[in-house]
Length: 560
Image 1: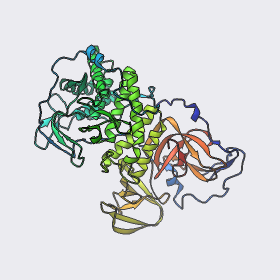
Image 2: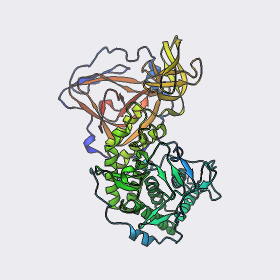
Image 3: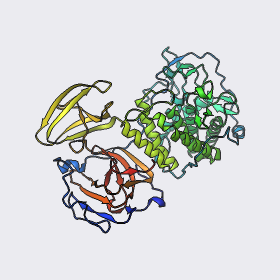
């Protein structure tokens, strides 16, 4: 992902030794020996780091890099039960008065909560701003009405408006318009906006976008609602959608004024506490702010859903970009403080993260959303903590679905192939012997429960069998699930440890390696993390290791 890089002077130090002298660098993949500082060669005759795997495979990256990003959004109501509303929905029928809406926005926070000083970063390249991943086809194969508005069909056959579905579809059409400049997508985004405004509920001096049906959340026992009910996730996504629409110059001024009013109305809901109803923001018993996707009858009985909170946090960024309102900044700070403080109960070490704090239910669809939204928070806040937590979740359970098919390189020799049941138990094995290095296609790189990362082979004699990732004997060729960072991050090379770094070539050429060992801890800036030839690695951006990749298993990245 291209884009300007903001200066981060404190991180612009090149490779440096924390403790004085630095050992030299050995080039083992071809080339000449280059010392980084006064010292001696780390290892003049290093052991072959490829264990017989041809360098033409181990040091080459075929094709283009594949970037991380949101590719699909699950329906948050899919695992529950929808029935007809038990109450009348009090839709507002009067035309909005933008001036009155703006005047009704509170000028103080609803309560005090913990903050840490995190700041909104405004100078973010467009492609790194919220809701820039998803695009939609011109022909809508989903359920929609005659106006092109996204609709939701319950199991009972009834069709309802669904605020989050309409907001996300509107944001996706808006992003598709940005990429194509085809007014069709902008018109369809605006159709979603018109429906949301027409079906708003005005209460407590704010705008709420209702779910117009009763809902039971299945395993989430605290999620039991009679319509209309309201969600902090919907309110936050409304902030993003209407704030973004209000900033599009080709939209007529009167419409942009209306969208600004809708954003103001939604923001008002973020400033109404639990001293009245409806509410979507509260603080917990320890003083942490929560924007609740599923508010409970009381703050303590809410669902404390992680992904919905993160989506709402995007809305605070968008609203601040539109208005500069300092309360949005404070809510952003408190929200990020809560997200970090509650990472541990959400994390499921070595496996799929939990959907929410009280219910320890791993959910692979939302695990990937946690990864992506935490990564984006680094761009929007400048906090390396977000990026590090995203990395942790990616290593716990890597995104299994590859965007396109890739090739697994296998060294000459005998390999064990596996089949597993849903709990990771081995149900079958067989041996595969190859006389020379070979390749096999895959579309899945997945952690097996209780085990390491495996590839599911899709063709040849190993078709429908898993093989374990084990560089350099078995690895997925290429650069996958690439995360780009702004500002650049810092990797620390621990003192006294030999680390081999890699400079990859493309199109069948052979790259190079450098083996380094430092007398003291030594820092280097990096801008990208990716799965490169089957290993998590970071790309160094300055110094003698510029454009080399360092294995994440051997360096320490910032944000811990």
